[in-house]
Image (cartoon, rainbow, N blue to C red; front, side, top):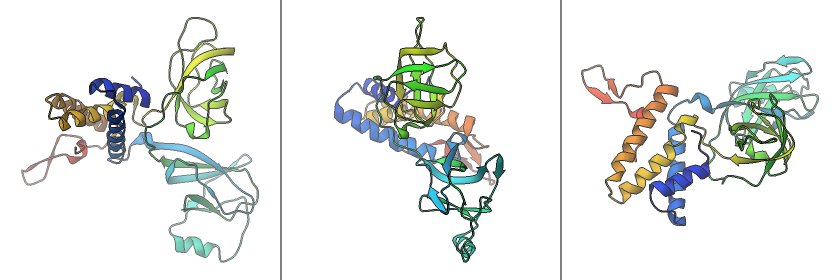
Length: 298
């Protein structure tokens, strides 16, 4: 089941039997430390996304989208033509390209530097779409669920959704759930990932809306921040944090939570990680070695 940051925080309070602010803040730190560490352990397929930027006329570099970590490939769309520039192999090569100034809407090379992406030749016109296949950055889980917004319109099979207010540019990658009800102008109760934000009231979803159309309505909804982990593994950071809490207290309940997070981590690697996911690796000289990729050290 999908779990937002707020749900994970609430579950941590229940599992540790303490909803004190200091304890919940401690749980936040431990959850985020574990979350970042587990996502650094493999080249996870769910961290790779398509992002876009726009060219600026007679300008080599434009800012990368805020959540891009590593650019893997680039293509540029000019009118109906798609160009596939090559990555400049190094900074020296890139600098040599600029010994003479050239301007064209036919890009040949791209280069990333200081949080920006550059094209050579520099673009002649503005607003051509630069499509960036990238590994995205991992943000801390720290945004409480927003339940004050309401959905005013979305059609069945559409991706454009309108709310009364409450959206922000940084909510790309957040999720929205129209509250389920059998009455008119209410949602299907499923979570939908936000693909892009047009304004504080309009966004586009990654997947088409599958519920009954909402028109001129005020359907209740929840907007939440979720882990980048696959849905079945959303609870891993919270389970690990609960384990750390009880281990710190020298309480035997730590053993149960440790078993849960180790089993969950192993399942995550088997489903999405490396090719050899056995708990024991063969060293080649008859000495079994524990597979280090399946464990997060406490």
